[in-house]
Image (tube, rainbow, N blue to C red):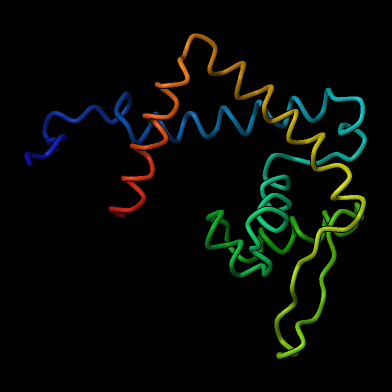
Length: 153
């Protein structure tokens, strides 16, 4: 298989890597706005980045700050501050792990679990708005390509 990109001719503004980064930023910005405007989620002052923490803990079983840093590509300091904010809002809590004194597990609280489905609705609205004019098959093919890229990384 021949390479898809040539360093001499690659467009660093309009090729796959910058487009993925720009799309990610647009999704995060759209989710932030959607959360702010939602009458139930707005008062919680949750950001898209904080939603990702709740989603990873609740749906993917990622339950330590260190593992979240790896999954979400945040440094430990930023992650700790985001978790602190979520804890102050009563949406997550830190729990000591039985087998170690040094590591704290994260758990989504009842309030976080109650708010999560409403947050998911907001995220779906943003994605559906951004995917207007895109077919279901195109979305599935894009997901497939992204999974291959991740597997190759």
